[in-house]
Length: 525
Ligand code: HXC
Image 1 (cartoon, rainbow, N blue to C red):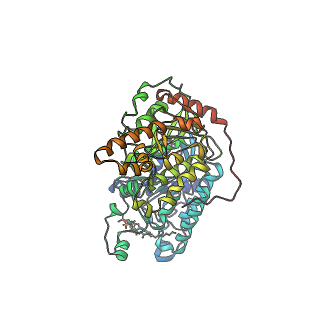
Image 2 (cartoon, protein in one colour):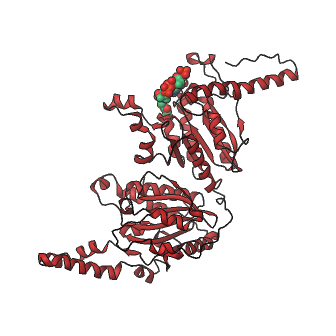
Image 3 (cartoon, protein in one colour):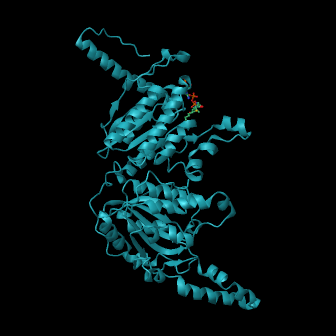
C-alpha cells in the first residue's frame, strides 16, 4: 500500500508528495498491472484508454480515490484509483468520457468507491453531452463489500437507462463480464467483444452445472461467438483489442455527441450521375439471390459503411454510412441469407438499430427485398407476433427522415414493415424490378385458384399453375399498382439510385415531426 514518505512541512515537500502519489498511480501500479495483464495477452486499463483516445488528450479524474472497506483485511490494501480509471478525452477531436476497469486491482470488481467513480464520469458525460465508453474487465460485484457492490450495479443500471437516448453509450468487453455486470452493457447502445479473451454471462459454468447438471464450456456459455452470433448481445466481435478500439473510434465518427446535435457532417461528395452496374444487379430469375452489400456500397459515400451485428441475424443488415457527407442508418434485407426473410432475431436487431438512429437524429435508408416474416412453428412459439411487432413499432415512432428503396420483393408483412409509406416513410422509391404484393405470384396463384388447380388433370396441373402464376405476376408483381396509389413516390432506374436517395435526404434535412405527447409508449418487449 502507498505510504507517504516525505515530510509535508514545506510547500516543496507537499509538491514532492503529490509527485510521489502520481508516480505510484501512473508508473508503479501501471508496471504491476502491465506484468499481470500482458502475461494474459491483455492490455492494461490505461493502455486501453490510450488506444481509444487521441494522443495526450486523456484527463484523469479521481486518480487518488480509495475504498473505505475494512472487512476481510481490506484496510490493509487501499490502492489509488480503486480498480477503475475514469476521465475524459477526445476521439478525432470530439469529447468522450471513459471508464476503464483494472482487473489487476481486486479483479476489477465493483465496490462503493469504484461505483461512485463510474457514476460520476457518466453524470459528467450526460451534463456536457458526450458519448461514454465503458471498458469492462471485471469479476463483477466486489465480494468483500457486500450490498454496497450490488447497490452500485443497480445505480449504474439506473443511470444507463437515464442516459439512454441522451448520449451514445458504448461497452467494450475485454475480459470477464459476469453476473450483474452484464446488465449495464446490455442497456448501452453497442457492445464489442474480443475474440479469445472476453466472456459475458449471467451465471458462470459452475453455477450452471450446480443448477442444471450440464457443464458448458466458457466459450459456449458466453464467448464472443455465442454473444456475437447466437444471442446477439455483442454488436461486433473484434479480432484483438486494437481492432476493438479501431471499430469504436470509427463508430463514434458516425454519431452525434448527444441527442440535441446532428451527426458530424463531412465535405459532401457529389452524387454520381449514375452507376450502370446497378441496372444489372437484380437477376432475371426471382429465385436467384444477389448481394445486398454491393447495393449499399454503390449508394453510399466512398463505398464505406460500418456494420453493427454483422454476425447476428445476417438476413437483416444494419449499418452506418454517409451520403453526401452526412450519416445515415441503413436497414436492408440480405437476399443471400434466408432469402432476406424477417425472423425474430432480424426484427429485434433492426428495431433496436432504428430506435438508436431515431434517438440520435440519424436519417434512415431502408433497402427492401423481403419475402415476408418467416413461417415456422418454432418462430410462432418463440413469439414472432410480439417480437416481430417491434420493428413496426420502431419504424412507426421514428421521426427522423426516412427514405425507402424497394429493390425487388416487398411481400406481405415484409412490405408493410420495411419502411413503407404507411409507417411514415417520407420518400418511397421503387426499382422497376420491385414486386409489391401480398405474397409471391406462385403462392398467390395456388391459393386463389386452389379449386381450379385441384380439378385439373395431373398432367395439365403444372402448366395451368404456371399460366395462373404468370397472370398474377403480370397484374401484381410490379411497382405500378403501388405507384398508382402513391404508396411509392417514384419508380426509378436502378443506376440513378444514389442520385435520388441523396436528393431526398437533402430535401428532408429540415424535416420536423412530433408524435402525440405521452409519458412513454408501451413497445411490445
Ligand atoms: C473481489 C475478486 C472478484 C470479486 C475476482 N477477484 N473477482 N475480488 N470480488 N468479484 C479477485 C480475485 O480474488 C483475485 O485476487 C483477482 O481478482 C484475480 O482473480 P482470479 O480468480 O485469480 O482470476 P481468473 O482466474 O482470471 O478468474 C476470473 C474470474 C474469477 C472468472 C472473474 O475471478 C471469478 O469467478 N470471480 C468471481 C465472479 C463472481 O462470481 N462475481 C460476482 C458475480 S454476482 P488476488 O488478490 O488473488 O489477485 C454479481 C451480482 C451483481 O456481480 C448484481 C447486480 C444487480
